[in-house]
Amino acid sequence: MPDELTGVSESSSIAVTAELPLDFQTAIESSKRLLSLGRDWDGSDAEPVSLPTWTTATGLLQNTIFNIGVDISIPVPTISACRDGSIDLFWKTTKFTLLINIKPSKVRPDFYAETTDGLVLEGTFSREIRDFSVILRALLGK
Image (cartoon, rainbow, N blue to C red; front, top):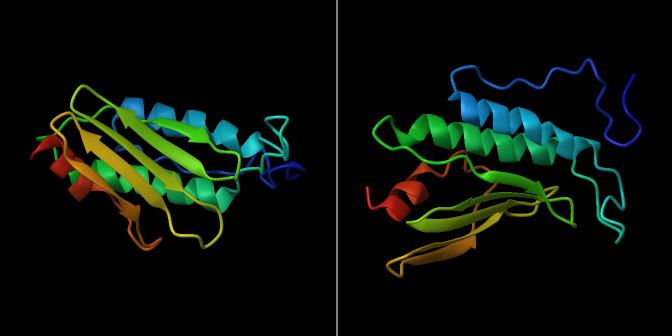
């Protein structure tokens, strides 16, 4: 039976691809908890995270890791819910900061990135974009 807040049943299968490095698999699996956040989860009228928003965010992360290449190692981002029901993927390293915000519904996702040597990238992108490896490579100078 589906949960009243998320519409996801306990027996629902949300696949995490086994070919991902274990730390990314663990982060994605752990982020499923975002689906259990109901309306007003922060006590200030926050919106719940929908399954399509979560699927888009984690799919983007998985595809990015697959396409970044074996020659590049990147840390696992923080995956968190925002008040508007969107999801942030956030990296902060000694070389760069990158925030990708996946909006609910059909709203275009946006991003902000900067490197320690002054490169700044920001904007929106199509929901059809399936990976961010080109941006990560630019931030790493690769």
